[in-house]
Image (cartoon, rainbow, N blue to C red; front, top):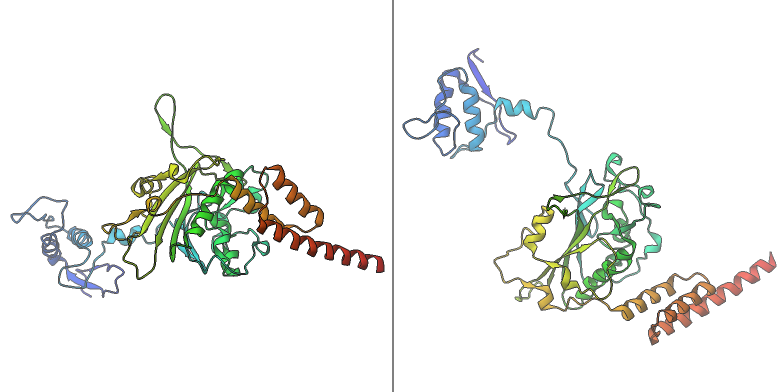
Length: 392
């Protein structure tokens, strides 16, 4: 290569190295800038920025090529020498890339040790099956670097529960899918009553939607929203828990998109909801927490369902469907029925029935049937255990 020739560092597009004589660089730069790229120097007669005829032409040509990205009519792209030096050792990594699992995907916030968003798809087939959460344990996500991961110890005695964004109950079709929802990358610090109560009821409503819609997509995540002081100033502050400073969100969001069937011409049903991370009573309806998708995107800095054609007729899910959550009696009966399955002794089972009656809710036929069946199983087991103990 001749000593006066300069090399333009190619962009990482698989382009070959290009060599130009030094005296030709200013002309190349002028041509590139004249192809519609804004310059930073004085304008020439044709309106394009013209670099000075000096040894700095290589930099100007590189800048012009970079602004153009790709030279019209060619497949060649250029990168300035400054850019090559700038990224010589790489750009900072935020770890926000999409992480995919059996039935959910998420983007993780390495600074706050919580997910930014969690996307899942549910259908009637996915919410039934033999997968059981009693076989699952909360644990760090192996795909998250340990330096940025929350630990179970961060949550213990913190005053906050480990709240699923993609719930275990949406993955009964697969033990693997259910186990993956217990990765701490899918968990946020959540108010205990909110987790077991209102948020749980929203999750149940989402599963109920699969009775009327073949496909339901859900995006859930935490928010830390500003609050206004008495003097009118706005601030954002949040509690952190544990040695790893896991961020406690002020609110949780959920976006629901439902489709009758892949063949249906009916408009998709969509709803966005923002719920405070605190106990919420049964008197509050889901529609009270509904916000526009646009407003939620401004709050979160996220664009939801970017491939969704919003010019289509998309309807409010609370107009298409009920957005009605289970009431006190239905929900209490549901929780009590679940506790029957978890009872490990006759004494524990009897407490389930006592608690239900003390709440003022009458057991229905399904509850009583399950109760009697479980009672027989536990009595038989305890008798067998007693006989084995005598023999020993």
